[in-house]
Amino acid sequence: MCGTDVPEHGRITGTDGRLRVWKDTVDLHEVARHVARDPEVRRSAAGFIGYGSTQPGDRVLIAVGRIVDGNVVDAIVGALHDMGASVDVLVTDDEPDRRFEPLDEITMMMRRESSQLRLRRGDRAMWIEELAEKRGYDLLIQGAGGPVPKSAGRYEAFPWSTEEHLASSANVFPRELHKLINERTYERITNNIGGRIRLTDPEGTDLTTTILEKPFHDGRHDYGLKPKWGHLMAHPPTPVEVDDDTRGVIAGTMSHYGRPFPRIEVELEKSRMVRIDGGGEYGNGWRELEEESAGTQYPCFPEPGLFWLWEVAIGTNPKIRRPSNVEYLSSDGFEWERRRGGVIHCGIGTRWRSAEEDWAADHGLLYGHLHVHLLFPTLVVEALDGSAIPVIENGRLSAYDDADVRDLAATFGDPDELLNDDWVPEIPGISADGAYEDYAKDPEPYIYS
Image: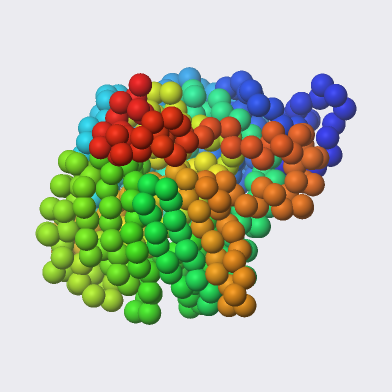
């Protein structure tokens, strides 16, 4: 939010249409009006999406897939109309809503030809970017995930497929507070260059890595000393450095898309995947891709092979909840929940929309990256002076307890309410009754019940 003063009781919305105090329940159109007036920062994370530079007379192009609920589109269009803009909506064809299948993560994330010939889920079509530029649109709104491409014109994201996505208090979480949470979380890493990170999780993850200095300064896309709002990187994106010493195990039962799978365990040495066990059909498919790509020397990796860790991304929004229709494509699966504060998703492979992916597509070679989610991670920075600095503790951001974060939260409402993770996943043996061993063998009944 722009300001931090709490208005008189009962005044929820300011004269600019943006919410001034925290509300736990929100209306679809109320959220749309708030988002339309929020500042533009080219992010796709809930709480950091805004179209606020729109002026009367502006021409806006929105591009969405046909799976997106028309009521969601209408709400955003109406909010932009209220600001005096004209809006064209382009609906691209994609498959109709259905239940997720076990291999959807692979079919949606991996390619051998240009991804523009068959868009990956959540990606942006270049022909629409070219159309917006050629026709002189003032703002292009397109794409559900990943970094918004660099462009001369205004460009923002549209990550909502359902009314439940948009009518979420996560989208109106106070921007100023959300930024401070990101800053306080990320500086625990950037203030300790040369120190080490240890990442653990009760599902079996145990990973260590050194915080390297060079990647912060060499201009790689969407990385540096400033936070990547809503998607804080605890490991640098590609290219993977020769002195990257990341090693250990990543374990879990879900990825972005697809059904939950029996517990998978991925072992890393110097950031390279050297072993993959379990995972059911997802694990079998991943092992086949590893066999296919093991001998290929990609330009972004120091040695042959596709599956190198580059993404250890921390969610930062405490108001994200798992969608009620998470079994269906329109929910965006587990991709939506990875935005919740303290949840980590690990990405192994090539960086999204990168030069190395263009290189692989030109050569007809496999590219893309696959995910494992960590829902209760603990991430600690071991500083050079020997101190241990908690970043995440059992899935909860340590920055929630920082004095300045709580003080700022108090200007919007009750700090305990604002800084509480509204949704905590139930995993037997970890956060719910039951045995983790039973859940790990077949998590579907526990998640889809």
